[in-house]
Image (cartoon, rainbow, N blue to C red; front, side, top):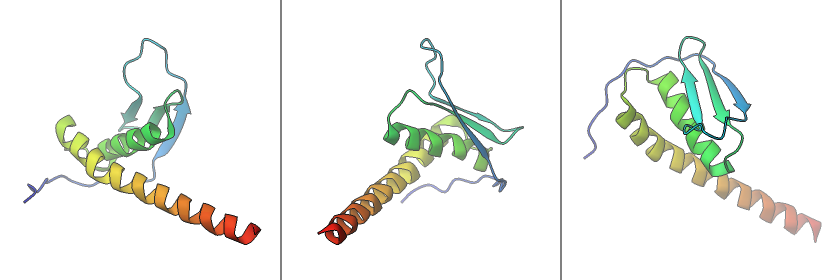
Length: 101
């Protein structure tokens, strides 16, 4: 059984910014709690953008969790959301293709 993570939850609309990070930069995303803003590197693929966005939003939503807990949050929720997006995209493409025939 999964261990329960206790944290206060911050519900506030975030600002998401995309920008090109420097080549020597090792991070692909940042969360700025004071501004409730996330920055994501534009040099990564769509699935990585999605997972990074989930990770950084986790920092804003659950500020009491440590990095290890946020990584777990990202893996559980980021993967589930990404698979759902792909499933919906496939369904949409199938419906669009069938209508064109």
